[in-house]
Length: 273
Image (tube, rainbow, N blue to C red; front, side, top):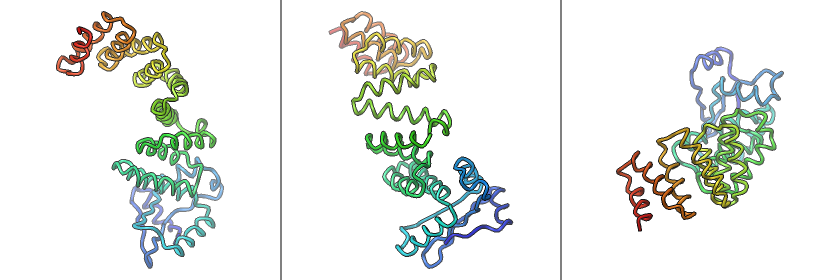
């Protein structure tokens, strides 16, 4: 079921050609290149080697029980757990990008069954879970990722995306203290990111920290003066604490940016009443 590619085919892969599987008695053959033994146990090298070698695995349907048993046995013998997990992760991403979150979740689960510490699979799995509404499961998966040294290994952008997803989960689950901690950390690392500041403002509002929320909104407006959401949120905060004139000023500023916005017209009318 698993075969090693000869050198001339390996060179073709390096040149950018795609490798496909071949079915033999309805059991897919997986063609892979085995990394040098010296790097066999290095997940970071294996990950980059996997991408360069364009490992491909295509299952049209579930493997028969006997075929799967043989497949798993050979994966074990060749030490290809990380590679196979990476393949399933790529397959899952294809479904994920098509909006098939349930299908993606199943493939991410398959990836993690081969290599539970595959960080990109954990990250992508958590994102798919969030998009399918399984917030508690997201938190659980990202906790596993952090246990596997995600903060030491993953790049800063991926870690920020993980934290952003976590923060939104906490907001949706009304764990406002945790949300506040996550978004404060993000703003500290990325002070010019208006999205993180807006979410931090919302977390502050939920914790009745009005002044802190207004400070974040003002910082967003300074960074992005035409950001309507920041003006609207500022106005809503002022309106909630009885500062009608300041609320009207914020709504008017937003209205100048988008005079055809019906929601803004309704907000202004709500003050005039």
